[in-house]
Length: 145
Image 1: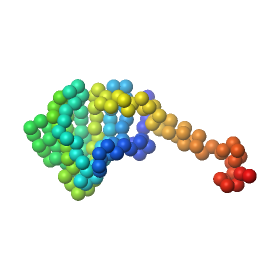
Image 2: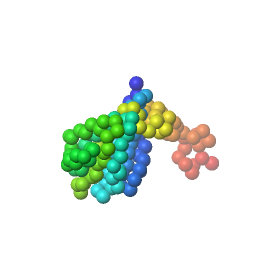
Image 3: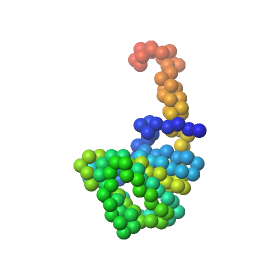
Image 4: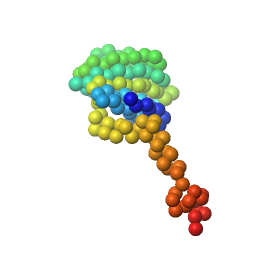
């Protein structure tokens, strides 16, 4: 069992005005999409072997799913079947956020260090960084002569 906090996860800037935070399970991936007004939308694309859910948290979006285009907003959920062509574009003047879930995992190459980003692993690194330097014997920097 693993516990995470979105704000403690690394932020990747994937396209101008678009960033993600990602969490990986054994076979599933969840990511937080954060888009600034005017951010570069993804091109119309598909994932041949992956299902995807989008849960809109903030902003107004134009979502294209196959031949259908809809305006969606907070609380809306879209299920994209494997192989379905899709894209979404932020159309509001406020930042947009969406939660995306992929099954199976979409970016397995990024999942290798997933255990490094649990709350416990991050707290452990923070505690280690706060331990006094052995040479400094706990004195503030610059006072360790």
